[in-house]
Amino acid sequence: MEHKVQRIISILKEKYPNPECALHYKEDWQLLIAVRLSAQCTDARVNQVTPALFAAYPTLEAMAQADIGDVEEYVHSCGFYKHKARDIVLASQMLLQLHGGKVPGSMEALLALPGVGRKTANLLLGDLYKVPGSVVCDTHCIRICGRLGLSQGKEPEKVEQQLRKILPPEESSDFCHRIVLFGREICTARSPKCGECPLSPWCNQV
Image (tube, rainbow, N blue to C red; front, side, top):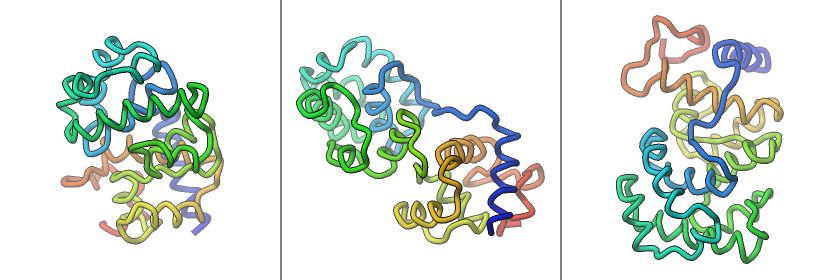
């Protein structure tokens, strides 16, 4: 398994040498909000919504003081907008009250924020703090790692734990970003381009 994992990592590195989060942001707190909006919504849609949202509330203080109903109007097209708007405003308030206006750098503190689950927390730890072993288990990761035999099942937390055991900690965050890019370009959910897939030797679907 170790050799297989190293080969898969190396091929993905070659194909996507500079993996980055697809969500657009300038401040750390903006990434937290963008990731919350991305739940059951595409990154492309979130990137269409956040410029106006962040222009209306350019500081964390402004976001914390926002009327939730007004925020709902900005994020309506992201789906589940009532929950997301509430979580955004309440999380902004907690960042100011408990964390000095900074996104915290521990899993425990992140999970205490409204609307933050392990996927969001791992992404923030990996992208903002470069914490080794940060595994972001989104739908692409679960689908593709299952096809490659790196994990079993579809429960995010269980897949995360399985991947933590086999991925080199220093590679895990970038691996997950690369898997997302790979899932959008080649290993799509409905019509995977198996004929041009560089990972086909390890795929259970071929």
